[in-house]
Structure formats: C-alpha cells, structure tokens
Image (tube, rainbow, N blue to C red; front, side, top):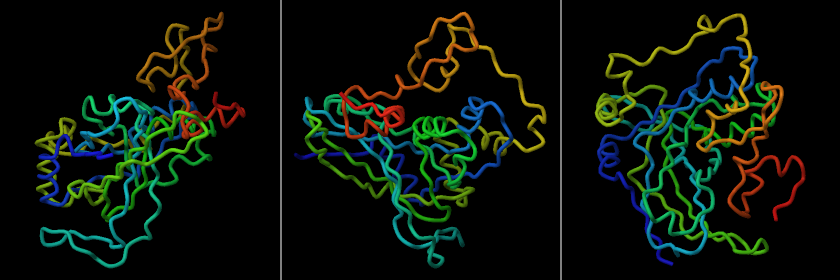
Length: 299
C-alpha cells in the first residue's frame, strides 16, 4: 500500500523551519481548588498548543478499511541546545530521551475515506514540561483518566529538539486479528526546539503574524498569568446544575446526556458515553477507562 502524507500548511512550516522553529512549554503553579470539576477546567490552560498546527493531508488509504492515527513527539538527539549569536547550537549532552507518549486522534477509528476527505489536524495535542502536574495526589483517579483523554498532553524537556511522528494503523475487522501499522511519517520541516520563552525574535514575529491567538504579543506583552495572590482564600461555592445543563458540557464537543431527577445538583450522569469508540479497537481500554475499572469486555 502506497500511503502518502504531506503537511496541509507546509509553506508556513517551511518559514518557521528556516529559522529553527520554537515551541513554548510551560510549568505553571497552581491555586488550591477544592471543586474537582473546576480543577479540570482551570488546568486546561496550563498546557500549550502547538503552532504552526500539525495538519496532514493523507492519500493512498483503502476508503473502506478502518484506520486510526497516533502521534508521538520524539527527541531528535541527545543534545541540549542554546541560543547565542542569533542562532541555535548544541550545548553539551542533554537529558536522557524519555519514550514519548503516543496520543490517538480524537476521531478514533474511522474509514480511510474519512481520513482522506480533508486535512487531519492534531490541534488538541498540548505540550508541557511539568511531568507531575496531573499526579494522583492532585485529583482522583477517575478525573486523572478524564484529563488524560481530554487534554492530549505530551511531556517535553525544554532546550531539546523534537520531531512529531505520525503513525497510521489499520484496525482488524475481527477482535482476534492484529492491528497493522501501514505508515510511520517523520517530516523534517516539523522539527522544533522546546523552550520556556521564545529566544529568536524572528520566530516571535512569525508567531505574531500568523497565529490569530498571539494577542498577548500584539498588545505589547504576554497575557498576565495568575499568581497565588489572585486565588481566593475562600473556596468558591459549588454550582447547582439544571438537569438541562450537563455539568461536564464545557469539556466535550458533543452534547452530553442528562438524567431527569428531582435533585438538579445530583444530575451528573457518567462520563463513559463520551469515551466509547464507535466500535471495537485495540485501544478500547485506553479510550474508555470505565471498561478497565468495572471489568466489562468489548462486544
């Protein structure tokens, strides 16, 4: 099978690559939040989205077979980099490269025709240099699973060079069959260096010109970050939800089901319908933490 993949925004990536692309990763402090749902919503801004976006045009798949896509961000080499004299150069041995977490595309398993119909983007993938921010000591395990699925976060070391790797897998029609990888794509123009603040003013200017969300730079400085003083010492009262307004609605693209009840504040149906893949896949247990939790088997 001749699978072909190219960037939908390859001209934009080429501009950044010519000046050594930089991606900001953040390690933000936390305010004490007692309400776990508020915790989920508040922490979504602690991870940076990548720009330029990773948008791929895929050709050569069988339109009728089912596939899923996975993205990894791999460390290019063992070097640590520094920016000096207007350019990037190796500055000794860096941190040992950790195995990158593979994140699946949010469309999960779809026919080849779906993946080839339009550019496929991984805009939900976010990067961070704070490996422990979502440890079990901060949130309960059920919320940790939800966060992992919703944020698609990937841990990176600052001042190291990385490259995104796209993998395409053909899924079996029967549960007994094995998943087959049909393509593994590394596009050199997508290499970047993870930084905590932009080093090259040319990259900063390119971000301002092309990123519609770079408002903080256009206004003369980065958006004000929250500080411990900004956090109220008194926890905010918990919201009371109407049975017509699902409390997790802000976290999902699709409307969530509601449960009719005489106590609106208790109308909190389970999260599992949002995580169920369209049909069986080898990633079923990863996509649906409730299956592993309650011992249900895929049908």
